[in-house]
Image 1 (cartoon, each protein chain N blue to C red):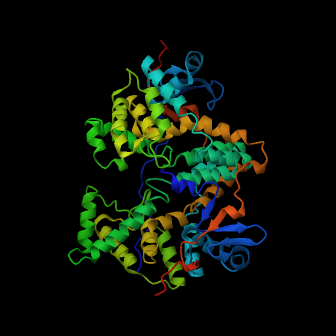
Image 2: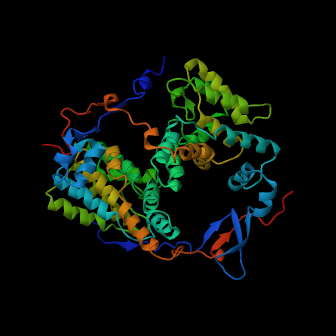
Image 3: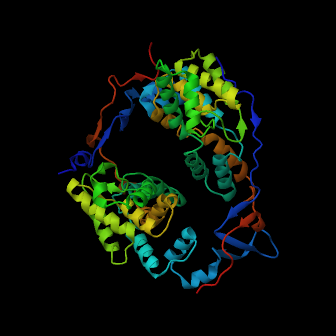
Length: 269
Length: 272
């Protein structure tokens, strides 16, 4: 019999997180959610607790919240926000449109999913540069060569613009809460200086967040899970902007706005 | 230390003002440039397709750019029916049922179910990888592949600890004398994996047929979701008018909590 492990779960819930004991209370990671968490911890502390099983300090939770604010731009040209705006103009529900935009942020190239690769990159960089034979400059040269001479290291460069105004903001929040610059972040700055000198490219928010949280021993999957809905508020803003208009009143396209490049007209045989 | 990234400048990239497509050609109505008076799919009149063709033919056309020939039509239609209903125990159907009985907005039920069907466990997540694998590996004898690290072959493996007998039945329902090279090779690999207690999975079956029919790997995951959509939705809607007590809700004595960390209360930051 090869299905024993499923048998043990049939008709049963086994949880490492907690449960609602009806009439007795709600337990979350050993805390009484209603009496110990509500009013005593911030929402963001509970978000991190639920995603990782560990309770962050209020200061770190404030820093996580600041990252969420940094990803809450109400500009519908940003692709996941555009989905929210299209949902509003289409008369979809705010939940459907916001959820759809969040799903769009689960992208191979942009949004939150690349944080996994960002954290893996800076942690690998730290291991390799810690080895006596490899300098940061040599590491960067090798990585750039892997990308055919382009500075497309995960956590560096950015689409649409050069630079990233969100990093100084997050640095400010980190200073407010007395977080020190750890070895991953120091290396991230060193890599940035090299790329800046050679390619005029700087760190992006992925690179900064990856290095900052690597210094605090977070894993890539933990960070991906904490930030699973990091873009939601900007999407909701863009939804609201268009939902309160006449239907279809967002970026309408005339028939002539589509360029058809396919087969000529043909008849069915 | 701080970043040098504060200086933000546009890259000045030129984004297209017009969307380009090879699929749909619309002809505008004379009185309103936003309305359509004719629509053509890959050159064919949409209304003519409605009159003369099966739904699966037009799906094939949308993705492949051509209508299927007789053999392609039969194979694609059979695959679509084969994968149309993951069944009430599938996690995606369970999600659909839970949404249905939870009185979730009806337009959300299918997206919810399809999102869960996008997973790797008996779902659509690995069709793309399986198509790439099959296109590459089928140039060599299947037995060679079975002797390598067979537990890592996308589209092949076990379900609930054993080879999936229903995926095997679907495979042999689809394999006939006209089966394409990749599907025949997938059947050979399935046989070769038998001694290692592995077999074809539904995602592998879907991948083999789609690869033989000339679909691109990037289309694979979504096409398998599309094929499963009717069964997923039907089960969810079936529960839309049922009472909340018709959903699973395990009693407290069947619920165990065992925290991963001891003590349960862990700090997220290093203590040093």
